[in-house]
Length: 174
Image 1 (spheres, rainbow, N blue to C red):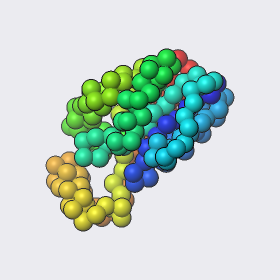
Image 2: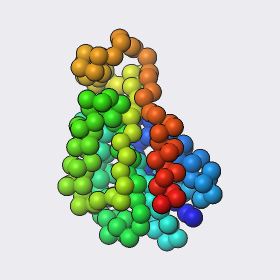
Image 3: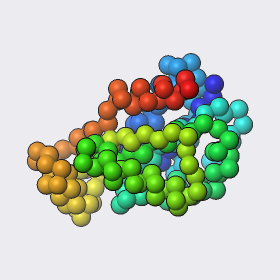
Image 4: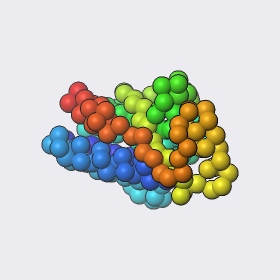
């Protein structure tokens, strides 16, 4: 089974998640084909693809524009196969952020006209060394004050790898 993994990564956590997805597909006996949506001119063929996993982070309440453009322009082809959309956000790391994280999926579907077969909210990571000063201040406000996290200045990963693996294997065997 060939599984297309189309992803967009901004700070690297979604790329790390994609590498994990590739290992999951191999472990399930499949053949992963990972394509970075940020690389211009890379051809994407659905020929021989049995399932598609889409993975993209949320920044400023949206998935990357290039990723959304792909979903919009290829929604007819995507609709012909089973798809799993992994929406990666910091909001997904917190119980009180889940409704907001779900709204990102609703919004991307409204903007692109694409409705995946399955969706999964995936907690992202704090990566201070990759933020500009303003972004770091906003993250500190959201993550530390609103979400009541301990004061942290170093990177912190929230991705629940066991839960993600379970969701991916569930999708691959369905």
